[in-house]
View 1 (cartoon, rainbow, N blue to C red):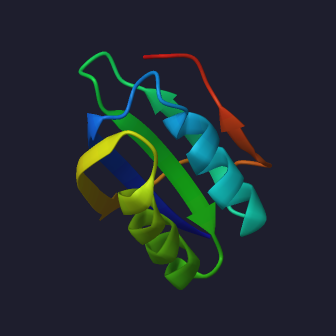
View 2 (view 1 turned 135 degrees about the vertical axis):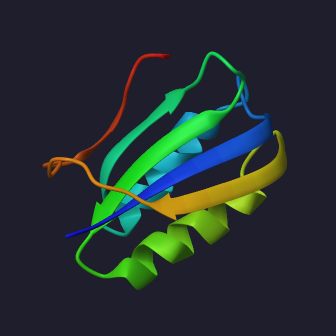
View 3 (view 1 turned 120 degrees about the vertical axis):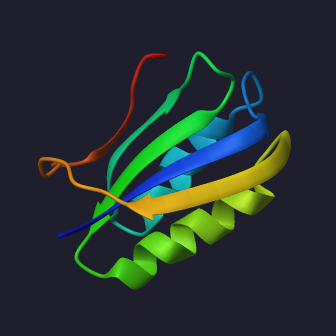
Length: 90
């Protein structure tokens, strides 16, 4: 299982960005979670057997609601998720 950690910066709180990420991830059968960071960014942990799907998700976030200044990504490690979920702010 490949894991990708994604950070989205810009004006991405209060504009439905987490719901946008959720919709994109579920459509591609990606598991993981998304949350608002206290620093104003949105964070995503995404998992899929095909790393290409994860890269495509990260790329799609550039066109999300609000104003996306940057999308950064790095390989990560996390216990396997069973589904994709929106979690509380951290």
